[in-house]
Structure formats: C-alpha cells, structure tokens
Length: 113
Image 1 (cartoon, rainbow, N blue to C red):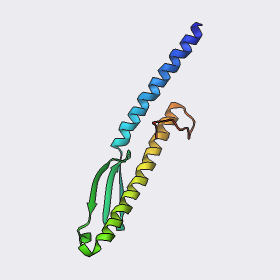
Image 2 (cartoon, rainbow, N blue to C red; image 1 turned 180 degrees about the horizontal axis):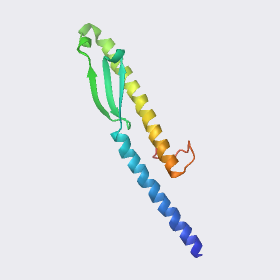
Image 3 (cartoon, rainbow, N blue to C red; image 1 turned 180 degrees about the vertical axis):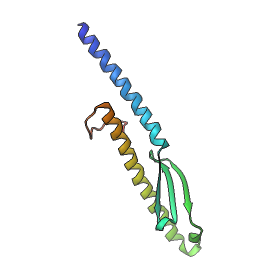
Image 4 (cartoon, one colour; image 1 turned 135 degrees about the horizontal axis):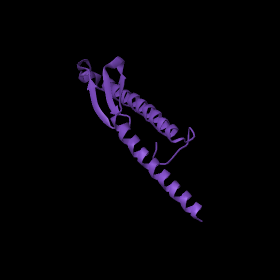
C-alpha cells in the first residue's frame, strides 16, 4: 500500500510541476512580440504571442478620406497577419514546453493552447 501512496504523491507533484510550467509559458507568451503588416508595411500591428495588441502604426500616406475603405482593409489584413504570427509563436513555445516535459508532440492539454 505504501507504494501506491508514493505513486499518488509523485503523480501529484508531476501535475503541480506541469501546472507551474504552463503558467510560466503563458507569461512568456505575453512577453514575445510579433508584428503583422500589410500594404508593403504601410500598416503594422504589434501584438504579444498571446494575442494582446500592443500597437498599431498607419503610414501618413493612407490618411486620405477617399481611401478610407482601403485603409480599413489594410488594417484588417495586418491584424490577420499578426494573429497568424502570434499563433505560430504560441505553438512553437507550447511545443518547446511539452517536449521539455517529455510529453508526446501534438498532445492537446486543456489550457495549454
């Protein structure tokens, strides 16, 4: 019976370690910065790999009332580009963390992605 208690304790410690590493990974994702752009760099969006928007930059040449729809389309495209890059950076970090834990690649753990 003592062996079972040791196994339970080890499993609990492993779960706590994984939970702490998941929390650390989430903090790290919020510190990784990505930039999406559109219109050859006329519109740029900066965000964390976690998806938090850090800033928007719009070139002055796009500030023309008649080009409002073009500007809106470029901002949308830049957001989407930034989101794609944030998703890739997040996936890379999660993969690094999972491999560091010895978990099989592609294992989806709730709260990890």
